[in-house]
Image (cartoon, rainbow, N blue to C red):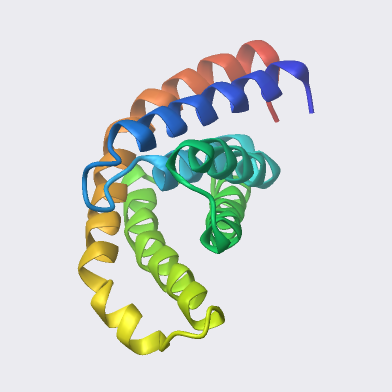
Amino acid sequence: MSTYKLTLIAMLAALAVAGRIAMAHLPNIQPVTAVIIITGFWLGPLAAVIMAFLTTFLSNVILGMGIWSVWQVISWSVIGLIAGLIGKYWPSIPTWCLVVYGFFSGLFFGFMISITMYTAGQPFWGYYVAGIPMDLNHSFANAVFIALLSPVLGTLFNRYQKRHALN
């Protein structure tokens, strides 16, 4: 992995962390999942896993660490890995496919975080069902952020890929 690619991942992580902290007052609306999906799609699965770890660690230093931090890294890594595989094998899919993937990733993320409560000895189904409105907020926010950020970042990634051979 080149220095340029690592620098690009660090800047995207900074964007995700700043977005998460700036929107912390909104109920489960933050750009992290969308940025990880876009990063995975354009830069590959490994870049998405690095993004998941960096973003979770750096934002949770400010927002609070806990057992959920491990599950956040796992959830965002799986989401990013899948996005990376989509980008690797189907690089020319339309943006709306990533939007749909982002929507379902929000639901998946909520399910995985609900497992945190189960591992802590709490009833899973009650926690999961109570969190469905928040999961839907996350899902719709992912769709909006991907629809807004993917064309802009995709253009930049294409331009820089020609100059620096990112793949």
